[in-house]
Image (cartoon, rainbow, N blue to C red; front, side, top):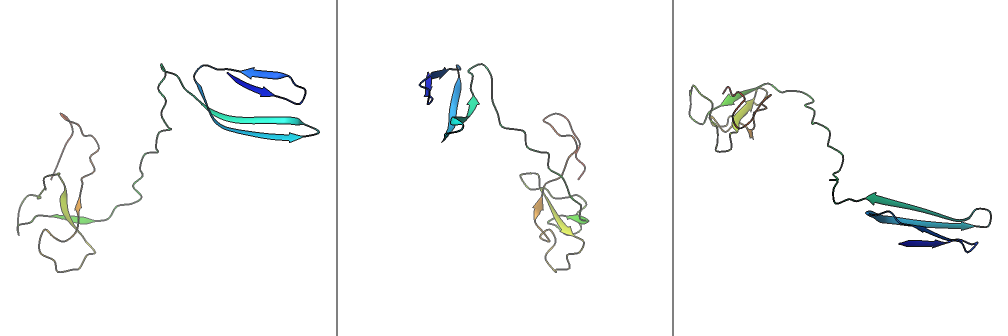
Length: 121
């Protein structure tokens, strides 16, 4: 139970089961008397609380690239143990070995799951 005492000696009580008081501020002037403001967060054992959902990531643009393999003139793309591709950006003019032209990247799949989706290396 929370009690607040005003200048007129009236006792105000407020109790809400399951509320958690986070911040309490008090201001006192002759004109307004005591002004109490508080922020709280509702809490309940039966209702789950979670923060607001994050916004979906936005792909701002795409860069043309070529998928490489570790072996020269390989027909298929080479995937590592995590399913990542080795790619070389088209504007990259370095003379690195085949398959080591750039970083490993993951493929963006429109639908993916344990037993559905598509994958086209």
